[in-house]
Image (cartoon, rainbow, N blue to C red):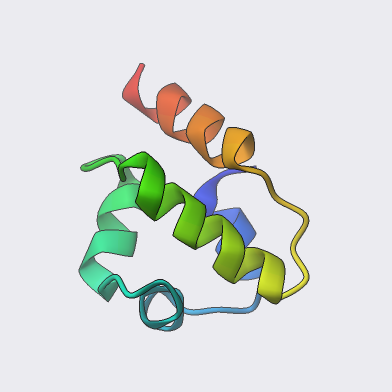
Length: 71
């Protein structure tokens, strides 16, 4: 599942996920589009925010998606 699908599953907008992680909406949009990649600390913050919304996700899930976007 990619980041957008995970965010949608959590029923969060890009803005809401950005606020929940201390990142901006633009950062989340850039990660979803593959334009930029978050560092490990930011990935962890995204995972925590999604888990708080009941989404079963791991750091590996996010990193795997980001790596497939970079290829």
